[in-house]
Amino acid sequence: MDIEKLVKTANALVAPGKGILAADESGGTIKRRFDSINVESTEDNRRDYRELLFRTEGASEYISGIILFDETLRQNGADGTPLVKVLTGQGILPGIKVDKGTQSLPSAETELVTEGLDGLRDRLREYAELGAVFTKWRGVITIGHEIPSSYCIEANAHALARYAALSQEAGLVPIVEPEVLMDGNHSIERCLEVNEATLKEVYSQLAKQKVLLEGTLLKPSMVLSGSTASSRAGSEEVAEKTITCFSRSVPSAVPGIVFLSGGQSDQEATVNLNAINKRASLVGAPWQLSFSYGRGLQAAPLKAWGGEKANVTDAQQAFYHRAKLTSAARQGIYSPNME
Ligand code: 13P
Image 1 (cartoon, rainbow, N blue to C red):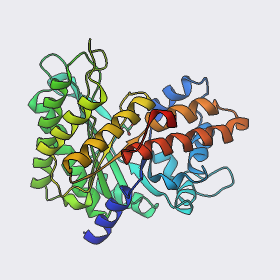
Image 2 (cartoon, rainbow, N blue to C red):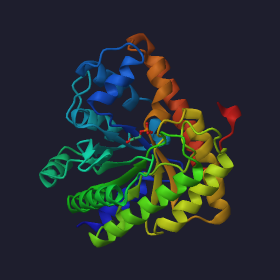
Image 3 (tube, protein in one colour):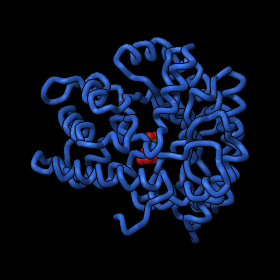
Image 4 (cartoon, rainbow, N blue to C red):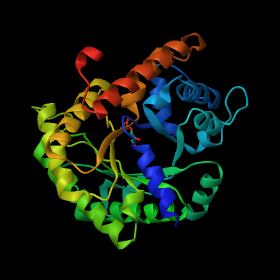
């Protein structure tokens, strides 16, 4: 295991002012995103859309790395340049989603477990050859009536640790993503309880499986009220409970926490990240607190693009602007009048 390289990459991904763009939507997810703008999800359209994001001038001022889907890692841009080269030319680190999505958990059918461990060692070797320097695996925890079960939390944490160990063996920094879904009418207290239990199990499994924490990043959900809760906590409370949760469960050896946006609007995800960073500097949190947003960074450029070549510049401006605001929030210096 090349410890020095892993630690260097992990720290570069959470360099001051910078964070990650998640552009690793699987086939079904990107189709849903394209449906929302009435664009057909063809291989060329997916390439054109992602290429416009990757070629945005100045993106690397705010974006350290981009997570790709398998198809994109192998794709060339319209002029024949491999998209991985487009990224490295911009000074952006290429990453790859390596899990194979969720399936129902046996004997617990309202819960999910992530698949993709079989053959992973060989796939990781190939991804490293194709130029990826970091990876992502997403486990999903659902909050509902009497769930999550400890069985679900343990099964997902075990798989996350198996993945992380294999990824480090291949020289690739694992981004460990135990997403606690925002769906439901649960309170923010319940979200804190579930996140805390999940993260404690994840770090127990990572330790058992000898994962080097300094060469990993955590991609969690913020601690939020459920999306359909009758009253929803404001950003101050989100920040306070999120930091409380992580101080109880995430070792300080982890260099960075990169939040997912998870169905928050782009502005909501920015406001909350800003409050989290303000709180973190008050209490002296040990990790970089940054972003790895999909929808939080892409909602505006996707809409501005609308599948039209003529809109590429507008879409790039929308992406650049959102990345700039999210970077400000990552430093605790965002204000709504910057919108
Ligand atoms: P969202 O920010 O849209 O939640 O996507 C991040 C991600 O990669 C989820 O796996």
